[in-house]
Image (cartoon, rainbow, N blue to C red; front, top):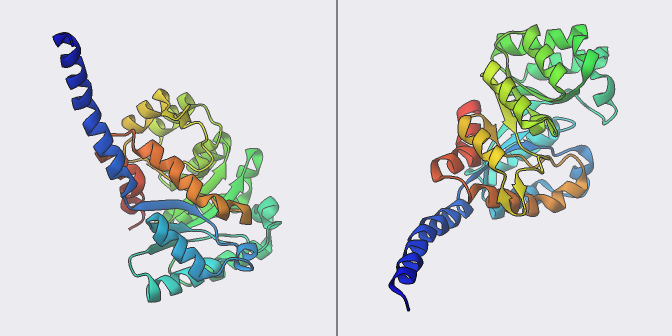
Length: 279
């Protein structure tokens, strides 16, 4: 066998070993789920203990919980304290009590009263997830919510378009926003521009199905994650019951992403960014 081929083979093995080690390590990282719903429909078919057991199996140690109604999150918190102290849940106040609320929450006196009452619990890390698009972001109660969050040091968890995102930031300069799905289909160049302009935005990656291209991390996403190493978190978004059946598949997808990142960046994305934001 020619010596130059042996040298090539040896070099390839040396390069492959660190990548294999990173992949193996990524599979064992604790995970922060930055977008979890335990809604009324799910509570009828999936018990809180089944949810906790799933998280244990998948090494989901930290959860941003935003449920409709909020009792879903509170039930999981109570059970986790008793049976799974290694799991930490960060509750967000979701302004919806029923599914239809997401269409008009920003102009509903019922929602205004509900949010006011829920905030008295003093346990919430943020408000949302809420949906907001276009000119609806100019509604007076949206201004109130943004300013309230800024005054109380709460995050907003917003499923919104770019215009609504900018409006929220204008209503309360400096307010902290977790951008659900990081715009879902917003071009990466526009995400880059928004992140550069507004350092208080964090991107949550559920439904960003463009992270991988033929099992490989998209180079443009790698550049963005590297440029903003502390600004992104993972998420499953169990918004309907069917999504609960996909959670293991979603986590496997994220493991493929994490395995292709340098370990410090993989740790940030897996759990450190979420903890730094919400603890």
